[in-house]
Image (cartoon, rainbow, N blue to C red; front, side, top):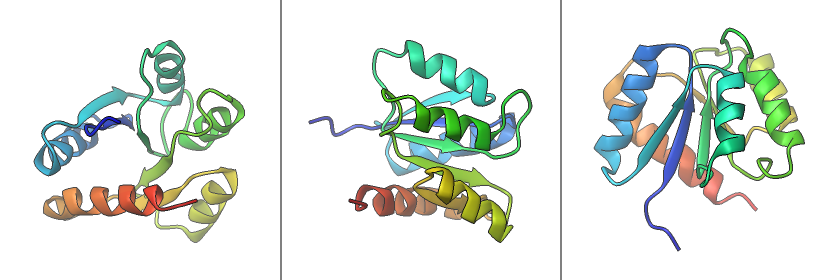
Length: 133
């Protein structure tokens, strides 16, 4: 069993991807980050990947294919459907949280304004998802 993890961050904002990568490295330097700029890019990478990520962190509002559309496509694809998906968004709307859970997201993590808390929040999200049956 692998002890290191691979996390995919799907976000059109380059700064948000940078902060995510930095938080992951701070938490565990052996963890690998794979990046995609939108849902379409993520699906293309995933369908070609030799090794799938352990978790996908998915932004909602992106060009080309947004997070909701990507989530639907992930859950329709039997080879990708079991990868845990954490919605990682600035949205605090209850309807976004409810809809993404209905669509199959495992957790909803609101992007933080305090980036020093990000490593701890990412760990918390992964632990909650890992404990799900």
